[in-house]
Length: 385
Image (tube, rainbow, N blue to C red; front, side, top):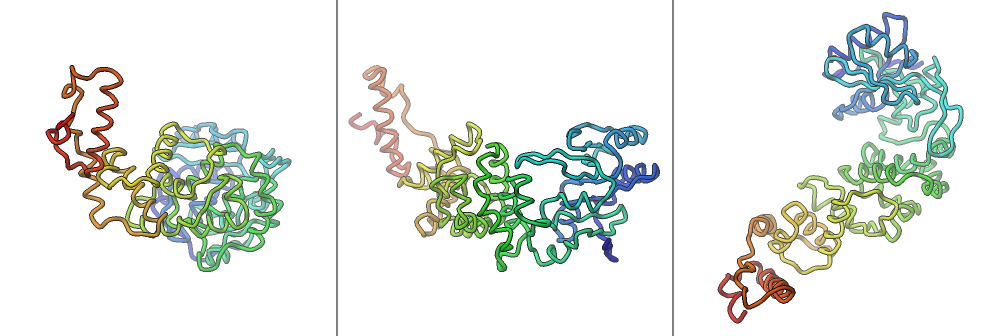
């Protein structure tokens, strides 16, 4: 078992609740280790958000010992051997060492294990099969540290075997490359080939799980290389039929100073979204964005129609699509439109107009006002109304 001489550190590791929980398990004779993302991120110097623990104690034992130590266990994933323990206000997912007994490409039947190597073998990528004790000493049962240092996202063992255990790992492969991979080196060839060969398996994955992965992928700092690789491997069009990634790289360049809004990037890809599970608000906003891509509305008009945030999305996406730069003053113009008020009211046209005729006339005047870049006054609009 490879143990690194230089420990990792961080406030997350030294949290009093975390240390007390681990000590309670160790005092009862059990092994308990940090695992996965927290170890990976600490080694890469990336912020740690979630703390996951792995142990040879069963979920029932974890719950009993946690309660005895004054902490609150919650059986959030008991079927998979996971108990969430809230210790001093901090949640910890504590999962028993496991080995796969049976898989169907969507979920696994697992058995508990006391062997860290068995637990590591069932994980997806070598950079996620890293452990650390409560002192921060890293344990590397599968020799994944060289891959992590090279920023190479490599499947544990045989890529096709790992993918057949859960076909969502195809999307995770591209998402992890976007987040942690070396963009200059490209994706690991054997993993990429396996993803392309088994892409049909994505049809059996729920829309919720596909959407969650795509959301995380498109929210990465620069997902363009991963998405381009997905397209050439025939995977992007499996989940977004008709999608075209060519404008994504220009958009990433343009929105570098803006918050990474995944829906803006989804809009520019195009394609059908039937395989996604979007909220009503997301469906509405996506439709507005795609309509705005083909419109000639000024930034102020978009600000008035869509609000400041969605208008910003539309302007950046439109510029990326057509290979141009946004107008130099687009941001203040969007704010001008977002705070503007249409100067004509229904009362200005009544009682001469009623019902459908009134609505049609208001819409006509609104379009004139927007076409004037919100410059026409009430008097100018009503002249001849």
